[in-house]
Length: 357
Image (tube, rainbow, N blue to C red; front, side, top):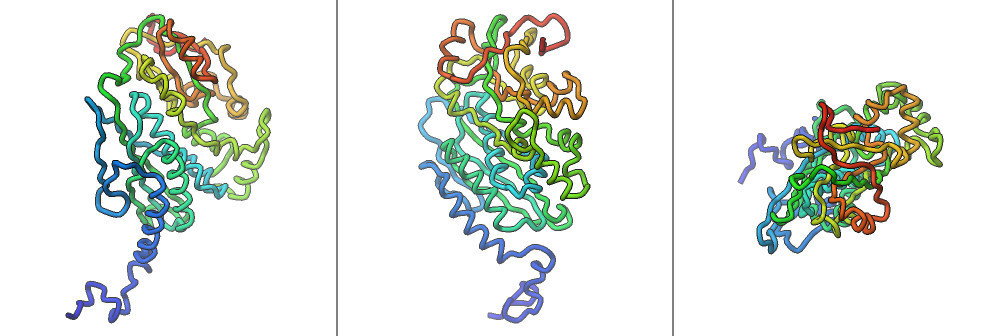
């Protein structure tokens, strides 16, 4: 049977590689998919019926009495620009998974499976695999299956070397153990676990303050990233690429005793804590209860940023905030070695849902 030339018969058509010349190499893409399958196979679970490769991943839900699925999607933001300048691609893969795991953890859910999206123009296969390796390592740590994803080559959409990274996660929690903030009461205490830095938020402001990755000289960008942060024994680049801390392993033993969980992401304490508070309640934080890390102090001083803007943009050293009954606070904190008592829930007396004093 003769294959028409418009189907791209590689044996007779001199233009069979036209798509590759246009910027999308299907042969290289097929080879990459096979390599991705090998990497992703490290992060699997017995419930996975089909992983990377088919048009859709299949996952058999296990034995639950009344399962509630929890889902979330997010990206890493312009932290990617720091990774590009430093030539480090595995850490942002970990960031992506950990951020998504923390988001569904706020509902009490544990992760089941994860999918990713990488959009790029000419990111090398090795760099793509480094992204996948980071995601796989994080998924392995959370017993979360990396069940599939998409790598899209889109010349003329992304500039050379640029890429975007997005994650999608599905988890499960028994209905009776769903955490939705409805149990939070006036007088509940607020515990917090420390962050490991900026996590994945505030990077656009930081890059503007330090003139990094804003269209200037890449060599000057790298020089700025190699400066030592006052009060830290590491460079600005190392501090900015610190991996977003996951909290699943820490909180798993106490999840059923928590009244509310707030992941402190974009919007800082100001915007994220009110997301779990019932109407009529506010959160009062004692600034003396924790030491704001040196990285945030350096950013604030260098940028001349007000306290209000800092707490509205960054996590300020608190990665996750927990609302707990006063009678449970001591025993819960005993199971969380680095937990800090940072405030309490109070009745709302004005427009503020978060008071930081």
